[in-house]
Length: 276
Ligand code: FAD
Image (tube, rainbow, N blue to C red; front, side, top):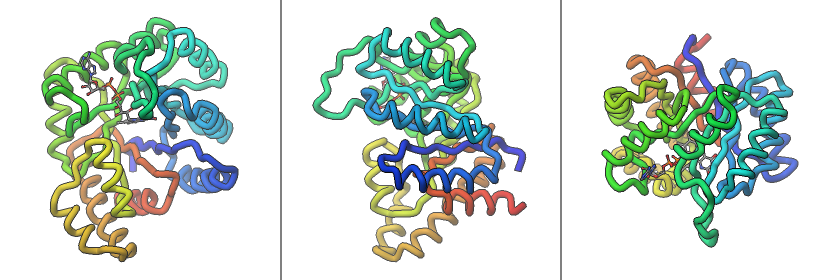
């Protein structure tokens, strides 16, 4: 498959998790990702784990993107971390606002991801390829779909090079979002984020929190499978491989897989898209 692909991981919390992730990465590298990205806990809560995992990926000879969230951060702190990332050889960032865990005050010197993008560009010029987040089904805290689209366009115009979407299971939402954003002058590539379906409860929990819609027919089918994980996985692979096919046929610029630090479902999806 010629389509660029990328994989997303979260920083493991234990030495066993780190070992498991190393093995998962080796399996996924067989598919020659353009880069692998590592999530970042808002408020800097996973900074050491994120940077450590990024370092390992770079040492394995694969391009790595560090996610970077700014809510609660200071300019001086961000400047210091950018210098650290540059010294590590990082050339890609996923620049985010992030969500502070409850209990943290808001504050901070950055309100929105667009502030972070503008700051990174002002500080670092073209040193980093900057990805931003896109929400084809609208960010859950947006005032309105129009306001959210405008905020996305502002974020891109602040200096983003490309975008990765929140996951979705309705390709129409993605294609409409891309058309609308392009019409407003945000013409950077928008790579769809693909979430394999491997567990019903996990997917429902995530989706409620991040505002991704699970279409009613998918939700009902998953609920009907109950604890039958084999059927959930088989159904999930069919649904998500159909989605990937529609996206590829529609000319997407790449696919970004939310691996959840697992390889099996992502590898099977890629095998179905490209058996070679
Ligand atoms: P923004 O683009 O700043 O948008 C946040 C909200 O503010 C939106 O509702 C938007 O409409 C509104 N808004 C933006 N600008 C303005 C403005 N000027 N005026 C009024 N309203 C405005 N979270 C993590 O904690 N760590 C991660 O590693 C992480 N990785 C992610 C990767 C991807 C690809 C995606 C899609 C999401 C990721 N998230 C991550 C989740 C993300 O942090 C949350 O969705 C967060 O709530 C919004 O971040 P953002 O960068 O999209 O924010």
